[in-house]
Length: 116
Image 1 (cartoon, rainbow, N blue to C red):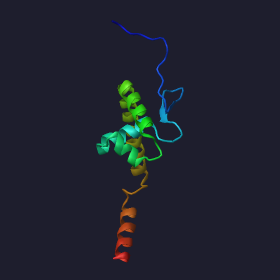
Image 2: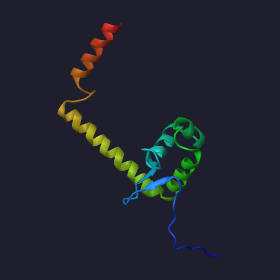
Image 3: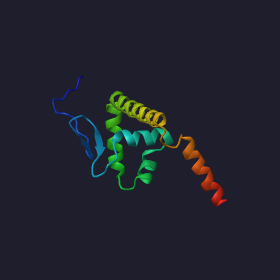
Image 4: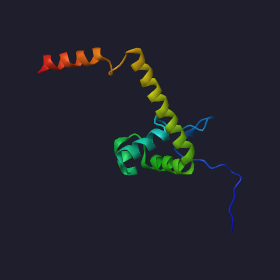
């Protein structure tokens, strides 16, 4: 038996924009961000709710449902965001700006000496 529907699937508790970027309704947390937290820390849905008490457990399960439905697209989005961050970090290093510079490390060491 085959089941098909012409009605698009919707996820309660999520806002999905024209570019299919999903965020938790009434928050600034994206589904991709929530999934990254889940994978990075091994958090269960209950732990995600503990860490983000403003997001209901129902909304977290809705986000997980969306993620598992569109796993390849979300994985691609996460990869693209990580690549962009790495490129920006490389640009900062090239410009001599940020915590990778010798000047920053020297100032940090001086502060530590002053405190200790």
